[in-house]
Image 1 (spheres, rainbow over the protein chains, first blue to last red):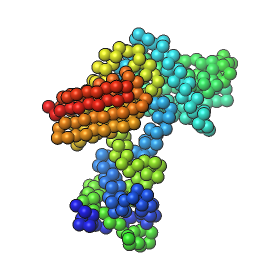
Image 2: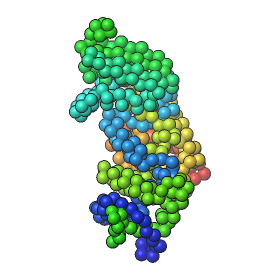
Image 3: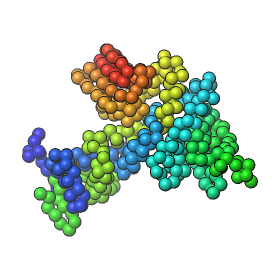
Image 4: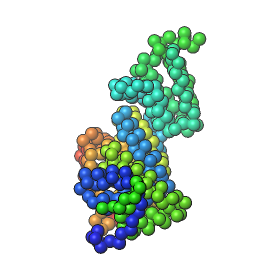
Length: 201
Length: 189
């Protein structure tokens, strides 16, 4: 049906928003009417799924950002199966590769000029650990203490994640790592300049 | 031209959209004005930040499935390493099984499962440059292209799609696979 024959209704909307929509519609070469309809249908789809459009947008920004850190979305069940199996026969190498991935992530953070690299790393760890109920990144002048507690973390997963954190911290100039890794729990302490003993005291 | 009154303007929308908005606002107990203004504002922000209008739906689908069907973020390099070390036959089986799970899930949840599967492929692990799912009267053709996938990863992608489509009730009619390119044809069973 052509636009001219459609029954149209009017809505009140903020003039400044409509002005912006009009400009966007012009740049896409479509009419304001067609564009507003398209946009409102998206709004309805989101609301109908019980989602929040603002949150969807934040998640999208997040997704674009984490892709630049070499992260990808995969089915959790598949990741779990592959990690568990590989840990059984190549645990050491798996930890080594994970550590390298952590180093790479940290280099990516620092090279992008992030003003607070540890904050960014904390954020990435939070995502990799599937939003754990407990995540602590305690930074002091001497070093950093990390604690991740998530009952869903298996031993293999905890080892992989701990190696990523350790690799990243090392790349950020923290050494002398003391760590405790087990099912559901990771605790890492690292110090600048590798003086673990001194910093512990 | 929309009519203006005190920072507000009247804007025309189609009768169907107006009806749906009004129904939704009433059902959800949300003021219609707020629903329209907040919705417009969020979409404008997304478009201004580089989301193409045609990407909006893909993006929403991704956010929805990420929450509902257990996708997780992993470092690609670690995954690649594991994939290299595992037996290819076994891994294809694991990807196929994962695909089957999504096929079953989409069958229950999505109005157009094939289209949603294509959207899922665009946003997950594969880093595809092109994804096309053409449905021609029960004959579906999937065409995926990536400049970065290895031969093994291409094979996993093929297994994932076949797993999903087979569990959606489609039989594999033909398959073409070379590094970075998968073309699969399915027939409704």
